[in-house]
Figure 1: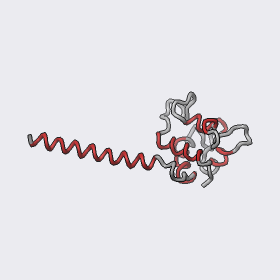
Figure 2: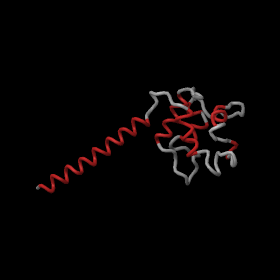
Figure 3: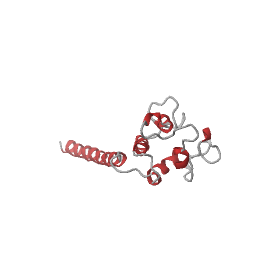
Figure 4: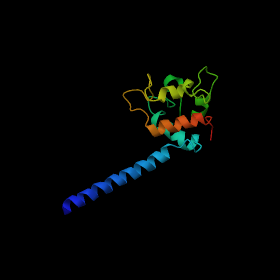
Length: 135
């Protein structure tokens, strides 16, 4: 009986630890109530997921889009090319959103690369909805 009690409490402690860590992660991830910073929140995502070798870096310039930190904001918000990468008024009309949203027909990052994690997707979505500010 004593072993079963110890086992029960050990499992309970492990479960509680995971739940607490997951709750902290979700709270940090769901930041729409807080202003998203392009420099602090979006640039790190672009640097690790998009502006990498053979994709949207300065060399490959895949699809004519460079997402290096020095030009990413200009390129994502430039409407003069006929493309609207970010559209706060019509979120689903923006090219960036349509490529990164879950279930996209032509996803970015492209297969076989893993899709953006939910937290990164949420932050980009919130940034667009907040007006895609250069902050």
